[in-house]
Amino acid sequence: MSELILASTSSARRALMDGLGVPYRTEAPGVDEHVPADLPAEEAVRMLAVRKARAVQERHPDAWVLGADQLVEVGRDVLGKPQDRDAARAQLTRLLGNTHVIHTAVCLLGPGGHHSETAEDTRLTFFPVPAEELERYLDTGEWEGCAGSYRVEGRGQALLQKLEGDRTNVQGLPMLSVVRLLRQAGFDLFARP
Ligand SMILES: Nc1nc2c(ncn2[C@@H]2O[C@H](COP(=O)(O)OP(=O)(O)OP(=O)(O)O)[C@@H](O)[C@H]2O)c(=O)[nH]1
Image (cartoon, rainbow, N blue to C red; front, side):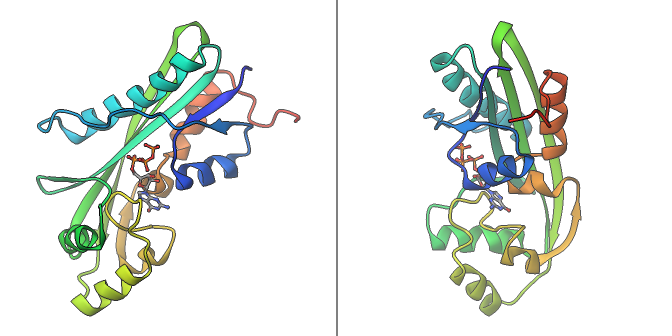
């Protein structure tokens, strides 16, 4: 198989791919992540996952390229990554004591016009916690670089009352689906190095 490129700057996505153990490298997609404001969350993440993968594939047409995007939907609000602590506090205040949905899309592009993609939802319910506890969680800094301002695999799990779906999907890649897409594309996931 020609090389696999993860079109991402996300350390969490890298960690998930490192765990899978398939040889790959990363490259920043470098795309404009703006989408129409009224686009439903699942359509937005699919559009951006494809945009990221295509941007890298244009630079490496013979490679396999995996792109991903994620948004948090709570009620009618759609949340991305917070810009600062105050934005993170506002996001978490919206999530605490409520149920929200993580929408993550992945797109696998390959030689010969291969295009496969999927979008996965994970539903999470957070405990209602007092403002002082929220400030202590913000002190961990886990909000930085995370859509929804928490890390489900870190101290953020202390906020988690219920999770329905793929936990890795929350971290950034729905690994059940990533494995399926790679196997369907013909990848040998235990190839000798
Ligand atoms: N470690 C961790 N990261 C999370 C969690 N929830 C969301 N994220 C990260 O939040 C980011 C979602 O923003 P995106 O726009 O999809 O991705 P990005 O960080 O800009 O990275 P690119 O793939 O380069 O676009 C991703 O990096 C996710 O890995 C979580 O629970 N744990």
